[in-house]
Length: 259
Length: 248
Image (cartoon, each protein chain N blue to C red):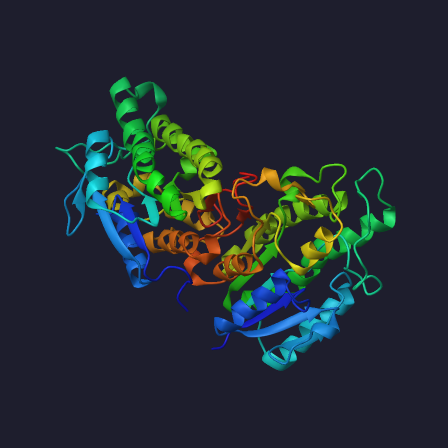
């Protein structure tokens, strides 16, 4: 039986989601891309325009997947970020300046929590009844920001993002407990800085050796992560190689933070 | 699909004669890795070595070269010796007041000193070649504590976490990753001989995945960490326990 995998946030080029969609397709999965960014839709996948911060839009997406493929085996919640996450600012340049919890707007807070935490909750909740039928895997994307926060002055990320991503870690554990008996494993990957299309846009204006989470000098491996290796880790969490792992966060940050 | 980045690499697996180590050897070979195994217990093609003896570890390095992946599985709650290579595991709980200094010392040596000595011998060569993956073995006993297997084992495995994090910092600039796997309850033949360590079916059913782990469940995670998927993972401790306990 061909496994059906939904990857959210997989339409933008050079994104972790796009790497995961490609990797799961290579694993033989039928891949569904759920994203707002229609310009990035590919004929390799069933692409469904979805606002994952809107539960009605998520329910409609899941219905379409079931109508077309009749099953869901894998869900990867890869939508996220501090900007470029709503229809209005989808392709806008990154906002300048540090956005912490003390100086962000309440709209920032709601939007960022919506795109990073609510989104993964709505998708997991809506897909769960189908995942439970035959078992499967959910993989969430968190961030090193959840471990160590965003230092004041850093640009390109935000305080609400760090909080939302910590919520994603807790949500991973809770869903793991609730879905384990149905053979659904729920795990999380927490990347450090990844050389995605989004990072390149931040680096275009930030000071030398400055990345959204601070300084490059804080990374012992002396480099940022690649989309390919981050995606490979997500894909591995969907395969039998990790069949006894659930509720786990894998930190992938070049030894910049060891939980 | 095979994992990327494994075929044609070379691995050294310690504790290769049985249980998890044996499963790791099998998995890596199936992925196209050339594997050398070592154990204090002679079985099949393993190189016999007492990893608590620095001289023997040095001799081992003379026999095995070009190691890309170093998998430090050797260890256990009861320290083996040259004369008694697979001593029986305790069938009941082991309180800390009942542990002698000799037992403490031998379990620390078998689980922690052994990993230190092997890393010290093989890491410089990885540094020189600007590539390496080291996978150490800690335990759920270090994550949540354990009176079943004893404080000496929990403390040694806790030491493995500190060793792993520090080596990750030191070796990161040389493109050598260092991680630890923390298995939960894994059904190995040794555990079976010890009456499953007193673990009940009720306990197994209380786990979120409702089953005990198998050595193969751990071997898959080792392979993942050695593959391209593990290229930027370093300093991490990865719980493989069916949801029994969530690390940080």
